[in-house]
Image 1: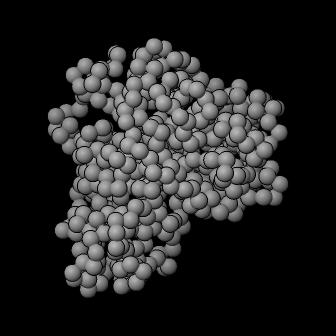
Image 2: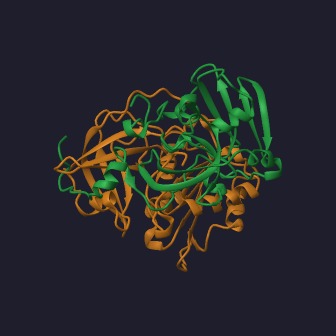
Image 3: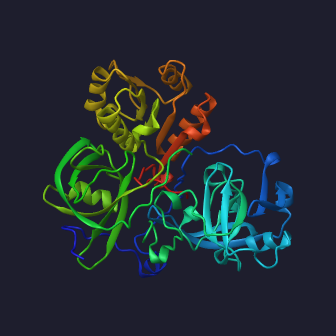
Length: 203
Length: 265
């Protein structure tokens, strides 16, 4: 690769560099990015539904959902728009706990589509959601997640680019095939591994 | 969401030639790039640029395209951020004749195509006006009959990006209306008002469409700006699904608006 004339760039510490996936930089704030306005979601009307194909398996109200076993995660997050944020703290319910509460033993399919109140969707393989790797988060840094960051509840899959961590989540759906979601249909990568820099279709 | 999907080919990095650099405001410059095989794009999209240091270190950022798909050169409009690694390089170092690595166009949501029709309401804060200008220019080239309005908020008069152009459009484009406001200064300019984007301004802009709700609304700017503007629009009955947003990230504590478009974070 030819150097860009006159560009020296900044260097981060070796420690930070090891935590930054290719093409990412360290951000100290928490930028907010979304495709549309922040939806207004009333907790009294909030429901979360697990589906197998078109069939609802179980729904939870806000109180029922918060009665499920709680888990905390401390992770770095990586946005496809290049920023990474280190040491973020989240709490919520693991996907394992949701499946257990719904009585889903043997997974019906290996693919899941996450759905949101605003019509957003994103696909994540089941193997990336289970094994305590992912949760439906309701708290960020010990406070309820604010609306602009995806509250009341958002998916949290920190080992993939953060668009996979769908905001304003209202359901998970097992699908027969790996069905591309909102951004995956609009030029973004079907899987989104930051360490392989899978930003766009075909990366 | 009404926009349609496309199946893009793999995006490859290309060397592009900087042909012109133009200062737009004290902190914003336009960089006109000749991109190989620049077969147009969809108005509202962005590109990624990549800079490489002699030791192989690389920095990547995303920037909105301000030019229209019909234009020969791609215009990247870059605001200089305090302490910006990449924006600082563009502002201090880049000159005509330089070569910059780029890939794109990127983004399949914050876009407008003539088939979508109108009316179009564009709402921009600061450098958030850049992708809106691409939409406005494209509309002027291919569908000038589609009614369009631009609500544009900046801090000061000398920070108005594309100032001459938007003033000129007001007089030459009968289907275009401008609501331009500055938030940190008073003004006597006939086309500029003072104050923030508020309910009064939004209702005047909507009334300008003669009782028809905009078919497509695009809001771009800092998170705070986009939040406020989209709340006002929803309060006035603009349908949720017709509003597309692009929030420029960056550290809210620093007040910076880093050009980092579309994603879900």
